[in-house]
Image 1: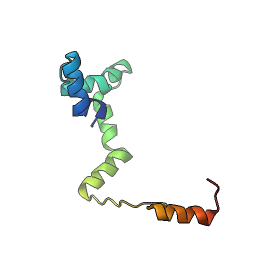
Image 2: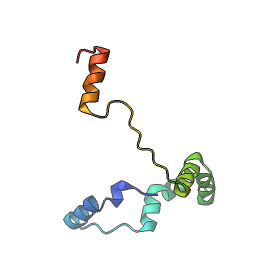
Image 3: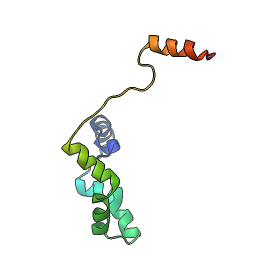
Image 4: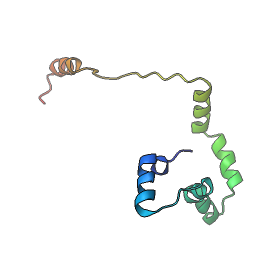
Length: 94
């Protein structure tokens, strides 16, 4: 799991240098992003991991890792000319 707030090297390095913050360890990240809540709601971390491994997002991620096929499709006008052609075809007053 990647959290961009704490993995962005520019922001983290700036805060560490500016305010003297220590780097976050994996254990600290786990506590901040879930283990504390699991304890409060009396949920077993094993139950969480078991349910997360089989959810639709985890399955889609695993399928993509095994067969990465990005499509990079663009819907709508891709160029300025296409935009104005679409605009004139729809007679929209912008």
